[in-house]
Image (cartoon, rainbow, N blue to C red; front, side, top):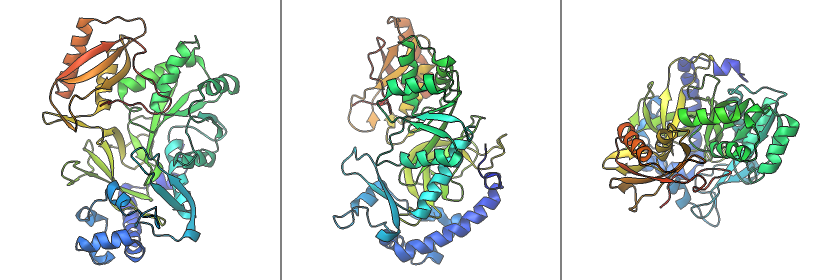
Length: 434
């Protein structure tokens, strides 16, 4: 389903021309109203918006780090120096979870909020859900940006049945009694519910749910993990992705399941960089790098070349659904990446390799680095959980170790543990424990 056919099928070269005009206006706005970017850009040698150029020149501008924004927060301005709007213009303030300290605040004007909901609605509609269908969700709204995604479900016309996290019994009762066609969850929670149902002799694959929409963490696009979810739910699985500081559900996967389309086209410009050097990487088909995003029509606290820390692979080949935007598949978070003798290792990639050994394993893994920091010496210890009723076998552990070495080019130590030994999550899974 396309909510905006003309926009979503517009030739990409034409989209870039439209975006370039918006970008130049956005730059002028930053110079006029952003204390943060006025100082940052002038310090980098760009005294005016004209000097900063257009989208073709964006790679010459400095990147924006999350820590830079936090450093400008004060008691008088807890949002930060990148705040551009007045109090009277702001209609919503979301916040992050604050797991690393004080929460970050994300203000929105009415126009910003509408753009967020529009982009999110396009992203979720790509999965094939349509107006009038029922959908259960486990997103916690509250202070978090997931609240805008919930508004997107209304924009699509879904009959939304919200539960939040920690309400498994109630959610599964609703699936049984209300017959929703879709479930909107994190990948970890979708996997947890398969085990929850099996432990109670509930055949989840025979439920009314025919589409599972996952977001919130990498994993939904991993072939082996996706296959596990689709078999357990008896449903088609697609994923969506956003970044709180920029927008909720910016990308959404269509029924072709070949990467997430940019639902926020016209609102956000996407780039790739080498995560170690910061050098721009061309958005060619198959290219990989860290995703960098820039607001094009944002007013409250717009960001320029914001480092998302999401490591993605790009698809630019034509998609049979007719959408013309680039597509991405998230390979993992650069924040979670480990380096073993010069080789980058993403925890989600380890899980993908291990999951291929089902049904002997449950698919649950936990990497336990022995040294502080990113750089590790081999073998990298990984705990692999066995399937229900399976027993530890030296041959299995060796086979997994060899497959990991072959695929990821890294030596690992595989420790097999009994089913149920690794913690499940009703929200997001933790794949690394120090």
